[in-house]
Each structure stands twice: as structure tokens, then as C-alpha cells.
Image 1 (cartoon, helix red, strand yellow):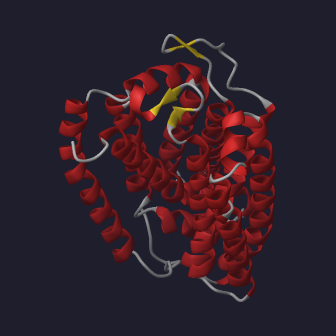
Image 2: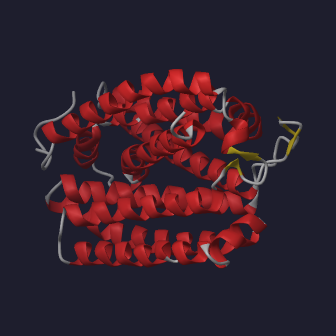
Image 3: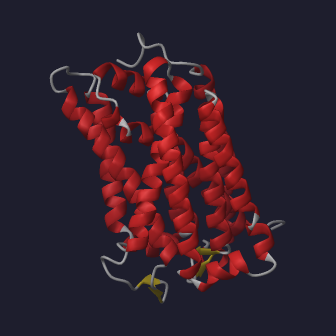
Length: 334
């Protein structure tokens, strides 16, 4: 083949995961922020802001998970047993959140309980995503291409820290999304929340970044030894630029800039993970090349991906374009 199919597919799956994080992240963040907006009207406006897009955002999770099973079956078969508990809880959170989103509109008297469900489901999903990420970063024990660890290996101080970081980061995305899509008191409150969540997210990113290189020698070499240190130095520099753009946008009442800056923090953090991981799919255990399916399968699946991915991008972009602009408080999802 004229190009490295396993690496191409690793890039496609990485893109799908990143798209899920930055797109579903803000609507999970809206749910996480529900307790800070106690009025029913405010919560209605918040859910109206994500109603046209939240279902489509989760398409990327299906693409990433399904692609991993088809293209890197060894990784799927070893990582899943290691992360059964956080993944199951995450999926239950997403299901409960989806049900709560629909049912909160069907009742006035019981709406508060569905609002609680929306908050709990969103928070659980975000927390478990972060914990699963932390467990993957700290390493999964593999022997003879099978999971060799215990049931609770995923739970550690580091994975709890990453779970908290992702949850707070999603709250930041949700707050900047509300700053973009709403007006009046809701926007003003969202902007204040974004200032606090932004500061907390940056602190947590810093702590995770300082801790990570000492978990695995591979990470340390990537970040602090030449020549990779030259490229990895750009990530914290760009993070600082995004942090300034976030602060400047919030303090000068910009609407789009803080949201883009918050997305930039996630994209750069994801790039940092890529620097740490490459060329491994499971750090220190399985590389991209040795865990990929046969090249004939990769080529066959790539034909489908060449049609599917642009199609998803097209209808996602169209949905965001059609529903651009501020939310009308008197109209919305019913």
C-alpha cells in the first residue's frame, strides 16, 4: 500500500474520539451545570440550546468504539476488560441522561426529578470518561495479548484526578457554550461560572501534566528528552495562548472566543496525549502496527470510512449552521 494503513486508521479513530470529546463535552457540561441554574425556565433554555445537536454529537462515540473493535481488535479485547466498570457506568449515565432529557418535558410536577437525572447522568458519564482515560494512561497489564490485571486496577488516585479534570473541563465547555448561545442573566451567570471552571481546568491540566511523565518512562522521554522535547514544548505554549484567549474573551464579553478557546484547551491536551502515546495504542504494551487487523480488512473498511466520515461531518456542520445564533427563550424543544 502507498501509505501505512494502521497509522491512517489510528488517526481516524483518534479524530473520532476527539470529535466526541469536544462536541458531546459541551452538552454533558450543560447537564453538569444544572444545579447552578435552579429556575425551571433557565434549565429549559439550557436544554433548548443543545436539543438540535446533542444526539448527533454522540455519533462520534459509536464511530470510535466500533472502529476500534473492527480495526484494532486486540486493543478492544484487552482494554475493554480492564475498563468494564467505568465504561458500563458511563453508558448507563448516557442512557439515563438521554431518558431524562426527553421526559423532563413531559411533566411539570415531576420535572425536578428528571432534572436531577439529567445532572447525575451527565456527571457520571463525564467522570467515568476521565477515569477510563486515567486508567489507560497509567497503564494496563497485558500478558500474551490478554488483560492480566485485576477488576479494580482502573481505580487509582491518578485516574480519579483525571476523572475530576474531565468533569470540570466539560463544565467549562458547557459554560462557554451557554455564553455563546444564551443572553441576559443566563449568559451572565454562565460567564461567571466559566471564569471559575476555566481556572480550575487549567490547574487540573497542570497537575495531570506534571504527574504523567513520572508514571511511565516512555512519557518522560517524550516530554523531556531531545529531539521530541522540542516539539512537545509547543503544547504548553499554545495552552497558555488558549488560556489567555479564554480569559480575554470572558472579561471583554466576547461570545464565540471563549468557546473556541475552551475547545482549544481540549484539542491541545489531546495532542499532548498523542505525543505521549505514539506509536502505542496501549502504552508500553501494544503498538499501532502489532495490534491492527490484516491490511486487507483495513483497506476494505477504509472505503466505508471515506464515505461515512465526510457524511457525518457534512450533516453535523449543517445542523450547527441551521441552528446558529442565540436561543429564543420563548421557543424550543417540546
